Picture (cartoon, rainbow, N blue to C red):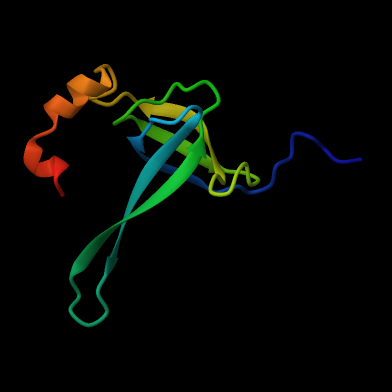
Length: 108
């Protein structure tokens, strides 16, 4: 008999919500850094994870905790555990959030 509460060691990541446009789906960006082997310069990288948000509680700009899970779709392999911190843009409507972002940042 399999113990239902034991899930093993699942990886957890903390990152910011980059997109929350889809129903029950969020895109979370996790930033990490490494040093260049030759030049020893610190390089920042961003990995995007597609995560399942059952209650659609995460908004754009929120800091969230996600956990690895079984494949839920072609790209979804993570699920939302909790919203760690509400973002600055989370209370705004999509139109107001787009207006709050400077045009220079929107064109990059």
